[in-house]
Image (cartoon, rainbow over all chains, first blue to last red; front, top):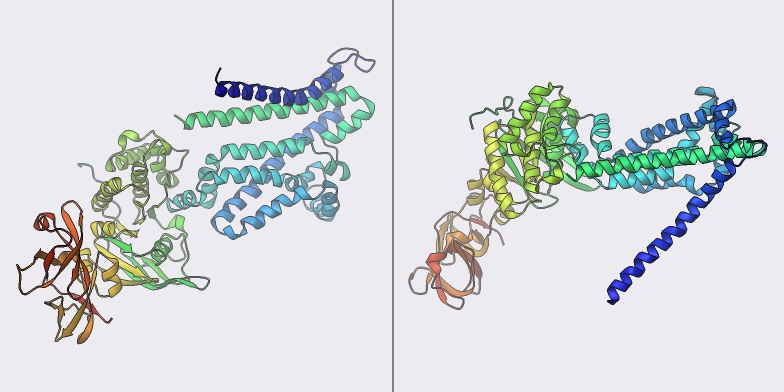
Amino acid sequence: MSTATARRRNQVLLRWVVLGVVGLLFFLPLLSMYQFATRISSQNPSKWDAFRAIANDPQLTAAIKTSLELCALTAVGMLVLLLPTMVWVRLKVPWATRLVEFLCLLPLTIPAIVIVVGITNVQSWVYYLVTDGPLSLTFPYIILVLPYCYRALDAGLSSIDVITLSEAARSLGASWFTVITRVIMPNITSAVLSAAFLAVALVLGEFTFASLLLFENLQVVIAALGLTNAPVSVAVSLASLAFAAVLLFLLSFVGGRRQGREAV
Amino acid sequence: MSQSHSTTTSVEVRLDGLTRTFGSVRALDGLDLTIAPGELVALLGPSGCGKTTALRILAGLDDATSGQVLVDGRDVSQIPASKRDMGMVFQAYSLFPHMTTRQNVEFGLKLRKVDSGKRRERAMEMLQLVGLETQSERYAHQLSGGQQQRVALARALAFEPSVLLLDEPLSALDAKVRAQLRDEIRRVQLEVGTTTLFVTHDQEEALAMADRVGVMRAGKLEQIAPPEELYSAPTTQFVAEFVGLTNRLDASVSGGVARVAGTDLPTLEGSLTEGRGTALVRPESIHITASGSDRSAGSGRVVTASFLGAISRLRVELDDSTTLVAQVPRTSVAAIAPGDRVDVVLDPIPVLVVKD
């Protein structure tokens, strides 16, 4: 056997070992959660009781509904705020790119608890002017997801010639709204979906903001349930992880189909 | 072609005292330019001379610091790019990657709410005009660079703009495709009759395509004239040296006649009227013959001879140590080699003589 073939075989073996270890680290907690949630006990007389309880607990369903609404509002709000800003910066004030990047990445460096304390006064205006319900969390959540979504959108915008495409569209008679919705967005669909997915995943898993601002979202209720009915709490966590995984799958599927069509 | 591609009535374009400053840099310095209806004017000049800035201001993609843009007598300076009704072809490939060729051409019509049947018909007509009707369902990445620029031209003309703007559309293409597309753009422009401003740094393109060529320098028009006039009768040293090859030869001027390399030549308007100066002489107006064949000529020794196909370019060192470049038909100098002594005669055509 030649040295090159042996090296290639070792590389393949190493790849599988790494994949196996990572897979184990990923799936072992999930399997444990599944095992715990389906274990028959005094609280769960039958195997699927914990999962069935999700639909029967009004506090939990309300929290799921709130979290899903927050996911949608945060994803849309983030895109409406970030995408036109990033396009505008590239077109009109490229010198401000670093500044905008710095501002977007800032929430990453500040602990969530500090952000909450800092925005409490601003939030009181949101309660006064917009809503004092849990959906008011949309505003701090948009700030929370900025660093991750900025990176995803930045990668997408860097892959196309934003300036030339925008100017071409403008010269053909397109308004700025048309430029963004019909020229820029369709060419960075994967990046937009990635950003939206990240926003959804982050909001689904968010606990600190909601807890400190005294609202009940999914994670706050899961934490509370963990004190009284641990199997249901774990079942909900598992279900939300499965939901995130389905979203990820859909994202890959849509992105993959798009690439396939373009490669015709 | 039997189909008619005529656009809306051609309009006059006027740039009036356009100035554009970027910080302390003056990209445009009071540019005045009038383009007649249906005319193709090329703006030619070195990088940074302001030609692209002028085009972008006309397109509405940049704002002038001062001055006016008038289209058909109407001031459009405050009108946004999307409402100026100008088609533009860019230097970079600008087709929308997520649309097919046909959808790209239809884009401007769709924004003008033309119904889908007419849109499709017009798009196919324009693709036929640029010879790409068979590629209508292809995406940009499936087309060559030349094809993409032809589609961009079709797209820019599809909605019948009042003005066509070409921002170095050929500079990203290889030489052969460039020459083909150059002729094609001119053919299409003549066919549709749209008033056109073409920006390039390639003098060959400008001279081959334009009705008039404007040479720009430091934000100003140095000279604007039909290509032949610009080439044969430059009014400034910069134009003479920027357009085509030029020899700088010692000259003495007296009574409107310049003595250059042993030949008396009439002088162009704007030349030195008396005394010693530098004559700017085109290489093709210099004749080279074997030594001794013409006693009235200057003489020198061939330093290098370059074969350029139909012509040869000879570098000759005259007896007074001046070096000149001559461009002559290959057949007339077939027997001349580097090191040979030759006679040098200049065509008796007017030359520009400038102060040293």
